[in-house]
Length: 148
Image (tube, rainbow, N blue to C red; front, side, top):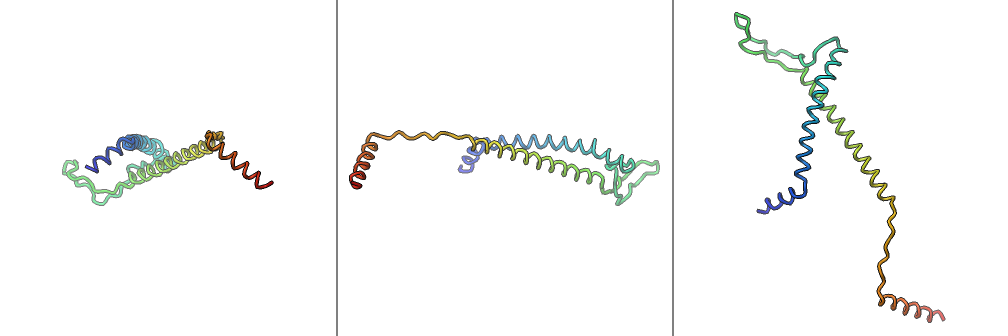
């Protein structure tokens, strides 16, 4: 029962909604970056490297087995190095983007915090009760009498 109560408090605070939103946005962002790398960056890299297609780079471990008519009976076993390189580029672009986004958000947060600290708020003096005023007058009179 205690675990359920703790989860209710956690969910009510909005943490679950924030986390779900972040996961959804992160997934969509990942798709955008994957498309950027696969459809824009890698073709440009292939163009500058002599027209090669990186996604087709493979290291054949075991060749495909062909039937007499030329059809493939057993697919080749290969290491897909080009796709791996593409995924590494995806990771670097996502990590750099997240780093820059967090850095910008922290700068904005710090700027807002400094502006908030610079705003001077007048201190409101608490109202002094009649008893305290009377005691202060008595103290002042006693101090004056000691000095005389």
